[in-house]
Length: 155
Image 1 (cartoon, helix red, strand yellow):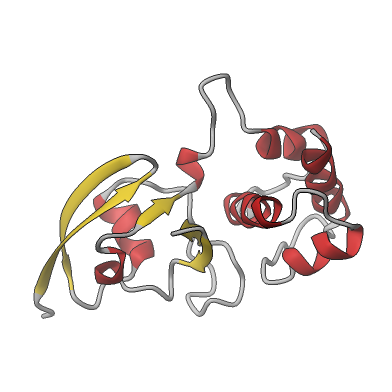
Image 2 (cartoon, one colour; image 1 turned 120 degrees about the vertical axis):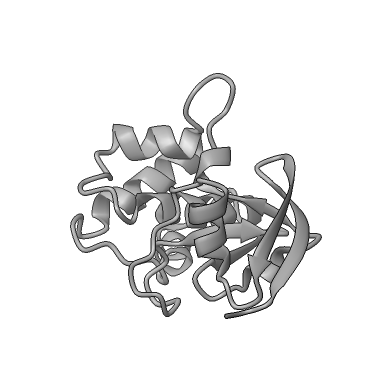
């Protein structure tokens, strides 16, 4: 059994304090201790992007990050993306373009798109494709996802 570590961090604007096993992933902490179920575990190896979160303005596969490494950091998950007025423009674009099928990859795609658009608010088609290349979708064929990100960039 792994030793426990006390950590404090900000997630979706709220300061949180938790005690976690030293070997627990950030993904497991978010899902099991904070009840933030948006990030999904698919590959568990950082290859699919389903667990993408934003940590200190960097896109991160939360399955590869230790929960203890969240100490002192600022984290944004899909649960923090929605605005007071409703869906974030990226989320709305995914709905409008029909870019959601089974929905398993959608939280990670939205988080990666948010990160990419923060760095490059006027991406080309190639920029969008490269920006999302670490996120796997097995349902859509990507066209609608790329169109959704382009629409979000225009809004």
